[in-house]
Image (cartoon, rainbow, N blue to C red; front, top):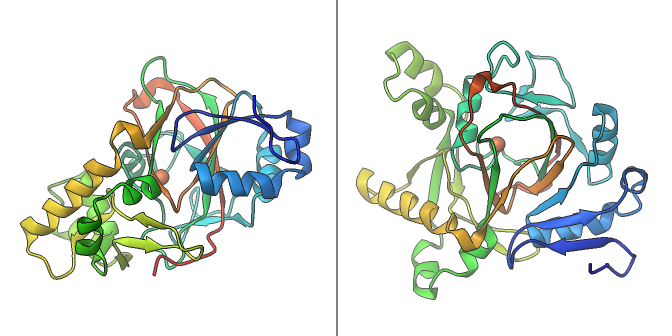
Length: 284
Ligand SMILES: [Fe+2]
């Protein structure tokens, strides 16, 4: 297994996305490799730590070694309005008050597109698994952008896309009542560049389930572009899929990947604990 200059053992899981880290929990919690893990995260999109089995407190400590711990999501405090560092991800409405809206987690997306500064990274621990389904997939939007033909890169440069909670609500319920529609319409939305030029100069695509429409294009032309680019970005060569074991931890760069969970039974008991690293740059 390769090791970094400072002695961190890792193994790449595919050419462009996903790296497994082989380190013991005490070393990870010490923060010794915080900077190295941040650098690997930016290069590789997803880091998998098999069966580190962190407690919630340990997960919070580890998250803090990667950057600034974030307490809220999309401007809303998580878990029923209380500010908590750990958010329970479950599709079971008896477990999570936001279970309904988490149905969007089954669609390709990145988090915080209606935020001025989206979160930098998510940290997810597997606590209980579904007997079937529930794998997580990530797609590298850096690699997807890089692989676009130059002509296409030029054609999409400068385009802006409106991301909205309205779009998310319509994904869950395509036939909103007028009252539901008005509520969703008055909730956050934001125009973002289709191509994110990051402060280090790298570029990535910003597409997925929060994308409502491309400014200045007709309805059908807008969908044509958004659907085509999402399909492009989620081709197998840009995707890493993780089949969870209880105790596994995954960290992903929310600014350069799309993610989704594969379908599972909401009553299966599947439970993940999630924490977040605060964002550091706006999309544009
Ligand atoms: Fe998400």
